[in-house]
Image (cartoon, rainbow, N blue to C red; front, side, top):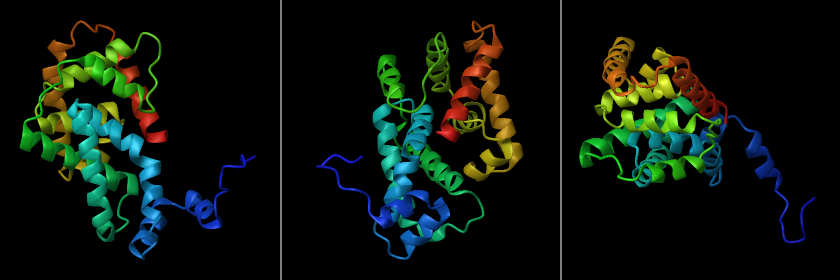
Length: 214
C-alpha cells in the first residue's frame, strides 16, 4: 500500500514497465519523453558491470556508461531489431569503453578495494570464498590489450556465445575466438596459482548469469 507521501504510478508508467525493450525504443523515437528512461532503469546496472569489468576503473566505467546511454538515446532510430536491445546496448557500451581506453590509455587503479566497493553496488553478489578469485581475475584482465579484454569479458565473464560476442564487437566469430585464445594464454601464467579451474569457471559463469538475468 502506498504511503500518503507516495504518488501511485500512472497507467502509462505501469504500461511502460511491462513493455518489451524494442517497443520502448519505438515509443522513444516516436516522441515518448519517458520511454528511454525505462530502458536506462532496466539495463544500467548490467551496462555498468560490463564497463567496470572492461575498464577496471569505477570512475571511467561510470563515464563510459553515461556516454553510451547518450549515444543510444541519439541513435535509437538506427536500431533495426536484428538483435536484442540488450545486445545493441552492450555493443554501444563496449565501444564506449574501448574508445576511452584508446584515447586515455586507461591504467589500473591503485587501490583494488575501490573496485571491490564498486562491485558491491552492482547486482553481482559474490559467494563466500569467491570474491578473492573474482578480484584476481579482474586485476589480471586489466593487463590484457583492449581487444582481448573485451572479448574475454563478453565470453568468459558475461557468458555470451562466440557468435553473440561477435555481433556485439562487430567482428567475425573467428576473430573473437582468436582474441579469447590469446587472452587466455596470457592469463594462464598470471592465474596459475588458481589451480582449481572449476572454481574460476564457476565465478565467471555465475556472474554471467547474474548479469544476463538480473
